[in-house]
Length: 341
Image (cartoon, rainbow, N blue to C red; front, side, top):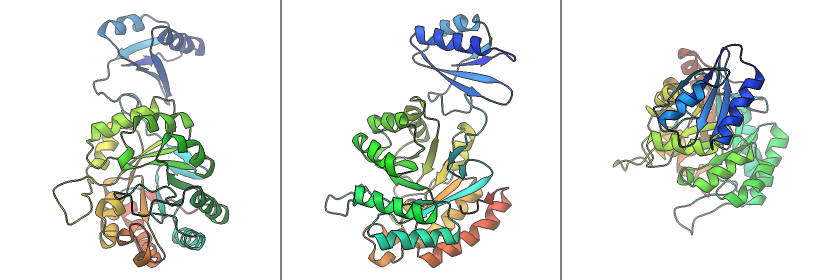
């Protein structure tokens, strides 16, 4: 449930309610809108609690939340969440593009790609230093050495860095180098990791699990939000279906669904969703038309020789062409593409 504060309530009344919730074994998460302040009550609630809370000073009404996910719902926060990463704003009127290689391989590969995607208009540089692989014999990343290369790319280009963190013990290490922590599809329900990235206070992008429902995805988001970290992005990266031609099936419909039921920004990943480079551009444009707040695209200087996911990576020229195609589609749905930092 959530508590709607009365107009003109005092900070003392707000603090009194939060203290009372704590005494009763609940936690309260405050959302201050333009007109009203709302407190989300987190914990195992019961019907009688509503009557108790409505008598507290400063309370206008107490409204039960019908969905199992609370902090991520529009019932709790009607206005869109906007996440700021340096000079980049995600979730506002401007479309954000993240781009870079699936895996960090060499210093030259990283720097060449960072320069190319920035020149084409990307706002954030992506690259994997820790890589989950289906087979233990595939390339699994360079670890901290790769993180240092990503930091070099940020130093040269000014682009913020997004990179994946795979285990709770690596959160502190990755946070020293990254600007956004990515939780991959395989870790969407790694609840210990979700708690840890939530406690880090870092911006986080949570990818949808390959077989996850939208409700399961949002419940995973609750783990991060319940730790007090509201700098959260969601990412649709395709789901597993009976179709085998593509790597996954891109669920474009999840984008407007998320925008209806949640206030969190939604990013689309057409690279992992399709697994084929020639499908990336069409699905990226479809995601923009559906209302995505951003895209994350895999780009490599030589996809044919990439150590990971070369088949779904764009060349520099193809990425540049895609960036030009995005502009009129974004304009058609009332958005504009954010200028590169």
